[in-house]
Length: 499
Image (cartoon, rainbow, N blue to C red; front, side, top):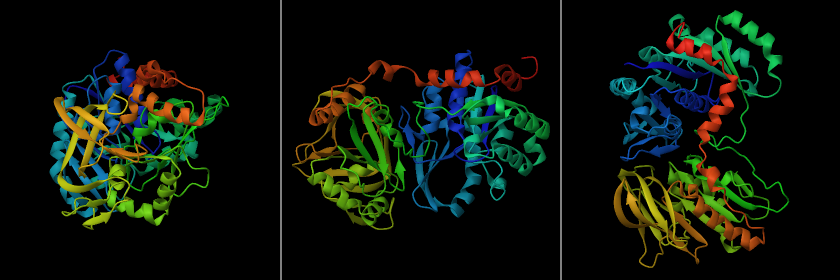
């Protein structure tokens, strides 16, 4: 492997590893290096699709774009997509190979180490710097002996490890010291410095703590990164419960997204969240407020189980209330399947039961098959005649009734010309769904779709800022992070003293 490797590990989950990895990818790229991201094993239901139809974590796809390269399954050779609390679909080099519980996967790990190492070597031969992301914490002592995503891969890559702590949660110095204490001596030697993340306030107030930490652990603090607001880079897993309201008194378009237990691809709604007059909320129970302008059922990694949970939480009745009151109801992928008449899983691909009754608003039946469709796709939204594009990741095949009205005409799938119909609508378009993730990312379509709500509510017309959509969010991320890093010292760590 020719590349130098720097690895971002964390004192725990959700400390900001993915975002800081993306920031480093763009910073090193801006400085003229050939940079590639890598994460040996990721557990996430937020996925992306490569040009050739392979599946990888959304985080590594975002990091690839930060490096200004196309995503590759080599960047995330093992992806685990949780389907239950104890089981996950296992994706190796972009292809789903089956569902395993923790015991079965522990046995399987021995078979995939070589796949991980070969992916690492291939990428390392193509880059000057590999930016590797860890998973969770490297100090989970019950898992350390079989952890493929932290110190084992750091040792294989001869990586300089940067340990990230989240000061917003409190106790950041204890996070660093405790993690270092739980590492073995050879693992501690790989840790070259600390990054304090999500800081609010006057950084000078941290000076006594930083001086103590550097003496205590004999490692430098390489940066104190502020809490970043309005970063337009997809988050890895968390459904951020953010309300986004208009600030100018003109009112807003209210959109609710049903928060599912196995929700997938929440980045589908990031473009809506950025709209200045859109209030986007995630709900897991019927809202007590006035009904929204639109209710969205998102994608799911366990469609039948999440459909059952919807019923248990009273959300089926809430969907009915919304439809009867004139609220637009939209389903994306798994949510689209839920809106149909029935979901069948005869081979138990996702569920333990063979069939479930759908919510009944669309004239469709979904049947699950073991082979998963994963592809990038381009199409035309039939009502607006506007171009849309995105990606498909689903095992369910949709069988619409003869009278069903489609939503999108697919004109290209996986880079190959196509002529297929996708999606279904009912009640004159009030209820509709599609398998196409990323639909709302198309600025012209999004503007057309939101303008309809504004007109109905008598709100002032707004135009989606297409130029802002095209402005590279990774440059903004790098510009926000770079001033808070000791870049000369970091480069010395990556390339060696005197670099």
